[in-house]
Image (cartoon, rainbow, N blue to C red; front, side):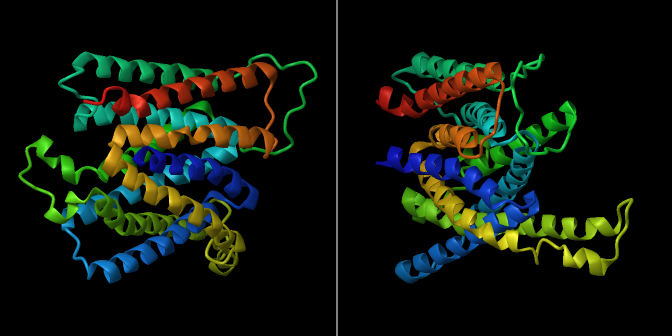
Length: 344
């Protein structure tokens, strides 16, 4: 059952970049809509939990770790939305996903001791890292850039901002670290003992499903806080740039008054279903497995970018992207199935 729950984020996060691109707007409009929509859903879940469970007082460690995970996600998501503008969904999404899978799985194994089994000690570790190697090869294939122009190829008509390679690398690097915080910090309270801490989770968290629900609200607070700070930055930035404009003019173009910010709340509702289900999946399946299951979203996102958003690629790049996509999916699937294959 929990493996199926772990696949809900794959569906939601696969649809999300297509919806967000169709609605349009700047990354700041997109992140406001996503986080505000998610916040309202989390508030509803929080109120339902309190009415059913008779109220709950947050443990400070759980609250702040969940808050920080949402904070990290928002930074990563802002940068991911930026890469959609620069590279397109079909290129940016699988690259972002592959890098997340590599970093988060390695972190989960090293820091949280996942992929450890007394019955299958070397088999599970070898299988896991072989899957990571497949993902790395897949990312390299996806990143392939055709040097010579293809005769007769008509590039897409969308005008994309020109960013230097180093800038793109930095965006992906910082964004991936943000997503690592999102996936890893939520599970930190239950793993603090690995770092010598005497902290123990309260007995209420013995119910893993309840633990997942409890994390959702503070996580959404962290998300929406970063989005608001980013929106204020985008609001006042033109007042201090080389082409200074008055505060009155800047206010008329503020992200808070632009309709795209509120239309993108539709995307927030889609993301909320993924955010809640990934918390439940992590609690029951573990961080590495939950991450790997969720990141199969690239099948929907990449194909949606190519066929729905009409993002064009030269033939060689298209073949390389599809091959890389297949390798990433195979690697992620292997990791997701390892708990079943090496069940003790």
